Image (cartoon, rainbow, N blue to C red):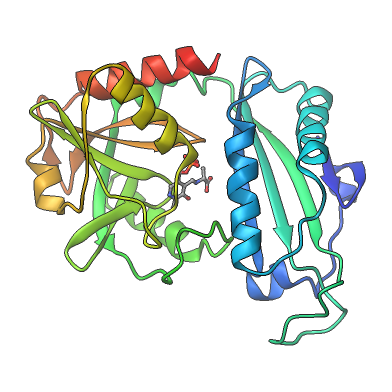
Length: 280
Ligand code: PDD
């Protein structure tokens, strides 16, 4: 596969980043994941705007212009022949050749890395026809989850806890309320109303979330943005998650409790269909 590192397109085994890179030593890095459907990027603009915001919040320099970023995305999709899949992008604060907690000089060049992942079946996904089983776990992440940093150790552990429990994923709970999934935003549906947590520093401002809430409103569905408990979600008619890597994923079980009939619900199924339709 051809990847991109700091201006060069290279075979992946030739791509190299310094061992002193702060992305590696300090998780001093932000990322984006943009999906590709029929060879086209979904909502590149939304991801570019969020990336700029993450960089600004951390006083990190932009590695290049938005136009150049788009060109790199397109070039990688083309070179790797991606029809359905993902483009991963990471920007780190770079390195001045040593380990130090203090940021390097502001003119230190950032590191920019992109690669593609081919995911045939992203749209026609058997996992989405089955629906996901989730467990709930404590949210012990830091307080700026609105910044898309690469501090993904706890979310990775959460997925492992889910696997160990025979489930597919985990939703996280803080102060009695669900924040979000390990790598997605969380929703439940009760009596036709879609409920999801409002945007704040506590959750990632999902690009798919924004699109799906717009589509739900266009389809005359009721949406309520408010805090909710895992017990409310367990007692719901249905539930789902959204992310660039799984679009709309129905949730059929929470902490061993089946939702409704224990199969993907009509709202999640419909939203998945219209999201994919609109993205093509
Ligand atoms: N994850 N919340 C968290 C914690 C996430 O990591 C993500 C995305 C989302 C959904 O955001 P979006 O709709 O913009 O993808 C919510 C990506 C896909 C990942 O880490 O692979």
